[in-house]
Length: 379
Image 1: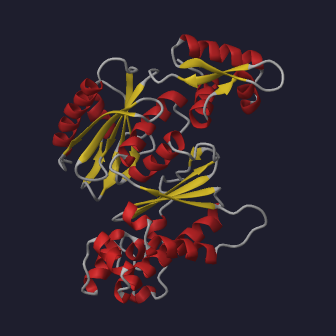
Image 2: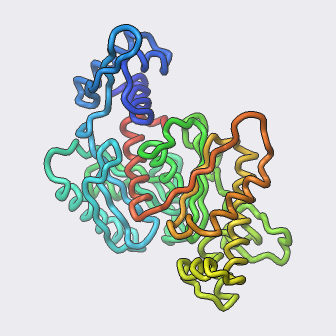
């Protein structure tokens, strides 16, 4: 069993890249003697390896990096149908991938997922690290112990022991996470935002998800519902605004999600296919331009409020590639800039990224990786 000192070293190297012993001592504010003991344990345990020499003032230093065969992790995404199952190494490299229909009945779902886990482990073959855990990314509210799905409207589940059932079928520890939270943990571990201790992520899909890393940790809030930006009412005329699935009116999700854009297009007699709608906007169709402009403006206004509240170093917005290069994204960025309070010094950086089929599954794998590499109290 590793101590918190071991976990802190693993966390630093995984998020920030290979480091020398001197760098680790300085970064973690630990003595060189303590670092040497922790590093020796991790080298002997086959988790770390000595890599290239770094030349600076004084003697050259050997950097320490995470071994690609130190472990492997399985990520399961129940975000959409079909469900996606991946097996990754500690750097987020996908070694095997499988998709199955997403079953709504929990018993059937878990049985099929158990079979899929067996298949990706077989497909990955020899030469990989021991598979040490499974992460599950799914829509809905998840218990604080990352075991139960408390409620998921998308799946129709209530108080389902996801971790317990899957663990029995696979023989591996299982950790469950809300799908948007899994995305930001994947961005922190496998993406380019690991060196930002404070950043936010917003996902634009059929719904809108938002979540935050504060002081390098996932911010959950007291009841586990922090980051519900989608259900912040922002319509100016709430009484006559569109109803939201949450029961309120005028929520951001009713204005800026893909479902909202399709609804507006349908009402205007335009194609509901997003690429086709964007194509019309690119050709100058006034109704298509108005729909995308309104949606982008609403999201930009919401992002500005997020910046005012959390002051993140970076906001990562994940969306479909075709949406990312459209008038929607341009207006979103402009509206955000227009409503953000101009502070002295650096402003929050907006980063647009494309979401792809494996994004949520990779996020799920990162949940297992962070839990098992960095300790129970990390996420």
